[in-house]
Length: 219
Image (cartoon, rainbow, N blue to C red; front, side, top):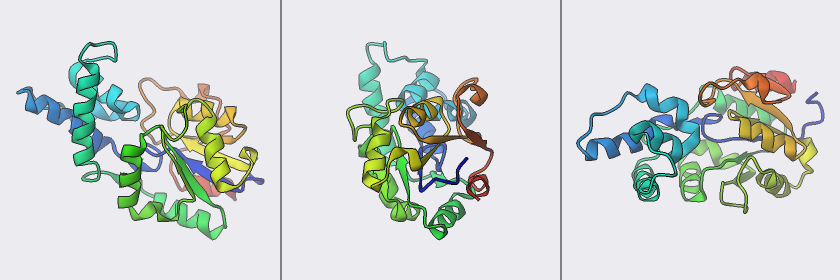
């Protein structure tokens, strides 16, 4: 199934890197600053893939419809921006996975819904991303995932047709976007996955339980 693949694209948070500790800390600081008790990290982690929306839901049971949501979101962004590489690290096996792709002559890149405001400094601070051939953020194109346009943009930057690209992600929107762009898709079963996620319903071509398992699938 993957014999024709000529490039591999990845989601960022929950697929290549574990940023949940820094995301959770940014929201928890908001609670502490208001004299509220700190919440366990385990409550934040499952919703890390939803970014500010998920973190504010956990910290304050706040939804985007709340009148204070935009102001609270900006405060969260400021907290996160000030300390987004303190506890963030690549998942075990990711560095070896990237090395394996390079050994196979397969270019790789990132398509994330994280805004460039955060994606750019984060990826520049982590040596892992020095070899990435394309990094597309949530605001690089007019539409974020699950719209396929970010996927098309990544393929354009790689100079390849989408159908020879593989996309790996830990959220249903990743699979929807990849499929809509005509790419093969792999669900990362080790990621955040969201609440009550059932990846068998996402329609991914394959799933992996660890990053290095992808190299086995690529042969």
